[in-house]
Amino acid sequence: MRRREFIAALCTAPLVFPRSASTSRRHDGGPVIDLHAHYFPEAWLKLVEAEGQHDGMKLTRTQGGGLQFTSDKLSLASPPEIAATLESRIRAMDRRGVDIQVLSLTSPMVNWASPDLGARLSQAFNDAASAGCRAYPQRFLFAAALPVQAPDLAIQELVRAAQLPGMRAVYFPTSYGGKEIDDKSLWPIYAQCEQHGWPVLLHPSETIGRERTSRAWGLDNLAGNPYDTGIATAHLIFGGVLDAFPELTVMLPHAGGTVPAVIGRWDRGVEVRPELKDFKKPASTYLRRFLFDIIAHNDQILLNLIHMVGADRVVLGDDYPFNMGLDRPVEVVERLKGLSAKDKDAILGGNAAAVLKIA
Image 1 (cartoon, helix red, strand yellow):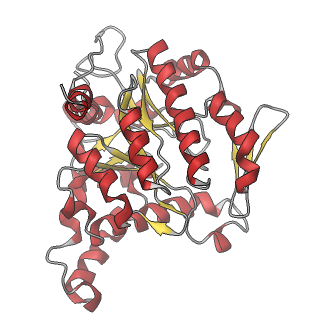
Image 2: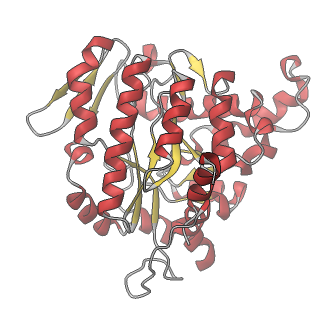
């Protein structure tokens, strides 16, 4: 069997997780799957500490075990739980009603680094995350980190990571190094993801407007994150990525950010703006190409999203372990009025199982 065929078979083979109707929070007994959960393994942190300052990133460990990342572009604090043992993470998952987490990086990711360091940071995360999947195969999967600032190295790492136990998705920043995610240098990565059925999970990193949102009130998070997701989504739609890769699935965090609120404006732009005269269909026709997590912090907004895109395009995520996430994600879904048990089960895990190829 050729290497490419081997990788394709490896990545399309369904994972089988046992079902226990007595413990499952789903009506159908299937696993509750969290597609938006963050993890900083110790090997990755040590590499940032040892070499990050050469590329302008400083990592400081606070007295309480928290982490502070500082560069000329950002200042980010992460709670101790993001780097805690997987045993303690499993206890937290059990309290939240989550059976399976898809482990992923978050800001600052790896895209601030030089190509060589970015590749090694990606390898460090992917290897450590896969080790966690091997240790707890019924509890964890992971989304591969890639040095997208160096597309050739990103492809190499993607091919390598695809052979690691537990890899089921790819993680992307919403922008990187002044580039947007419709940049043609990324299209070979999208092609690989489409070919093997890997969903692309997006997350803000260097959010837009930091010169205005970083001044006070945490606006870089409260406003910057959802706005940044909206802009990245516009680039995927208007930049032709979704047309070029019709089978590619992309997950938008934070309930899609601004996308559900501005999609009508984008449709109007297609009708009247000269810049979009060659765009042949409404932007809203692309909505169901995306998955949306449930982190809306407002039941009515979440219900509106579900009605807009369909329950089959919404997945559970809780942004673990950050305070802007959801402490009880299962309860958020269960209390939504007017949804059938089937739709709730789909959001709690059925939709994620389908895209991650979990039987």
